[in-house]
Image 1 (cartoon, one colour):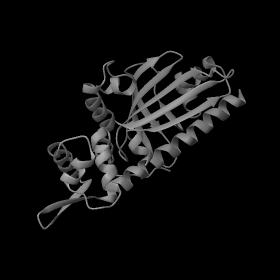
Image 2 (cartoon, each protein chain N blue to C red; image 1 turned 30 degrees about the vertical axis):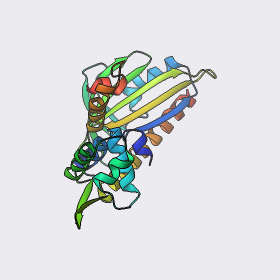
Image 3 (cartoon, helix red, strand yellow; image 1 turned 60 degrees about the vertical axis):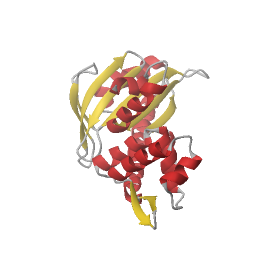
Length: 137
Length: 110
């Protein structure tokens, strides 16, 4: 069962056919987010602390809080919705070592799972928490 | 598009699975054979007390249930919460597949 291996997180990875600057544009501009992330993006700016709403066709919507922005590299958000658990969403960009493309990685995990993992790892890890775990700690 | 599983249930499942020992206990329970705290302690590198604590946590979260057979307390998984968690995984994954396909098309269109 996959979810046992991955702390209940949904992971996706894809190579985008463009360089990182172009990909970052689509990740960091709310108007561009409206082209792919959600049908309606109510968010002034992709910056830490910004809050807004994402809406999809069919009436789905969630509140979004931007937790971390590392230019050209990473956006972490908290998504809070009524129809499911609150989640941490992380989108990371990397240069594709094999070509001119950009590797995009997505992680979405319930906050309860992220926090529980942080508690579990706190004693075991010598390097300290990283990534989503550090965010929730 | 999205299924609407119970927030707390999905959270409880994933919180339970975040602990490696509990993950192994859930794995053993998932095999469907009758499991006791002693039999689990015999196959895992933890004490019977630690196993009992994890089993109690799983039961409190509604992820396992116990029945008394003679002098033994046997545990088994309650499948419903795991089914909800899997539904959440599937729905969330499908949502990202769709979003990333849109992103790819957007970039290809230049």
